[in-house]
Length: 167
Image 1 (tube, helix red, strand yellow):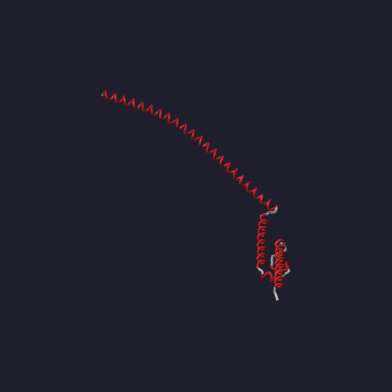
Image 2: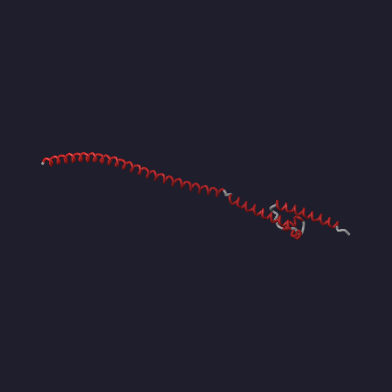
């Protein structure tokens, strides 16, 4: 007796179960309401859970689907967290306006203070420039006076020398 008829039937059953498992996995992957669990896969493929545990690849596919769903959920949470409600956006806008208004007021106060300091510095510079010019004029007049006095002293010394040489 040959075992070929049983081998053919076993091969056909194996292929049919593989096909049903693939279809069930595709359905689980597309439908997020179906949990990515062995029990769900077994029910959809109409096989026993042990059949899935005996074949390693369906469990690997379920793990991949779970990881993809977790990643999608994380990105959705991040996206939802970044979306603000209109009230939150309004509050953030108010805070931003208040911040820039405060910056503007500080800049205006700083500008006013710097302008006052600049005027005072210019006034001081002008005063000391006038004083320097006046002092130079005084110095120049005094140099002229000193020069005349030195000339007078020189003439007087010459006269004294002449008078001493006569004596």
